[in-house]
Length: 306
Image 1 (cartoon, rainbow, N blue to C red):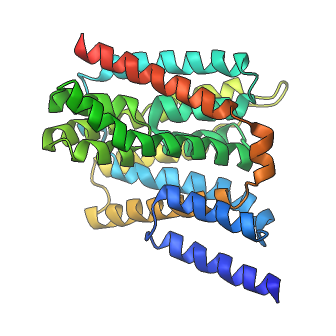
Image 2: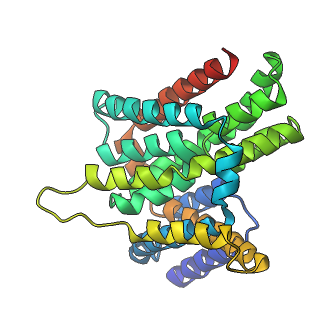
């Protein structure tokens, strides 16, 4: 009887999450909370679904991107974007070794910090065959810092008297997820929102080279390279949207559905993590994420100001 109730509650929460009523951090917490008080009745299926749903979500998000628009509007931020990604990824590899952190977990946190938060983690994790536990910890840490950024960045921007242009560029580079970038810039002004959104979308394109790099770095010795074909589909989706090969209402529906599916995936990810896993991991993942975040925030702000 108890098992049936647990299954019914789990399915009910999953339907609530996929409807789009809750946001990403809440979905992750709901999944974690469910497993904390009840055993996940579908844990074996969740591990399989996570990787499939992540790939589908990433491809679907491609239908919301335009190559020409993002490249044209982000020329000014290209140098800053390139430098911040290269330096953050390099520092991430170094700190992962110094902290003696699991290599794949460290790479997921680094990818999320350097490119675009949960979307980068979603794209990189199936490429490197990351475990659900590593995915959930990386996402949890990134979402925590995203929540902090929503309050801290506008306060710092006003304190330093940053223009809307400066603040929009800073948000796009230093804040992880697009949703948090939009949230922080929205309250600062329309120009800040426009610049932050376009530069952030161009940063998402760096998922592609980072995925390819990850594929070679984490290839098992003697094993053939497993090409991330879903990344090719991601590129194809961007091209389809850029050349308007599919009606706008259809692409809008696909993007919305992909975001909802990604939120559902986060719920499943949260349901596969336990307190025991978190204790075994320790504070090292958070330490890595904070150090990288402080580095990219100060670096990008100094570049913009000076």
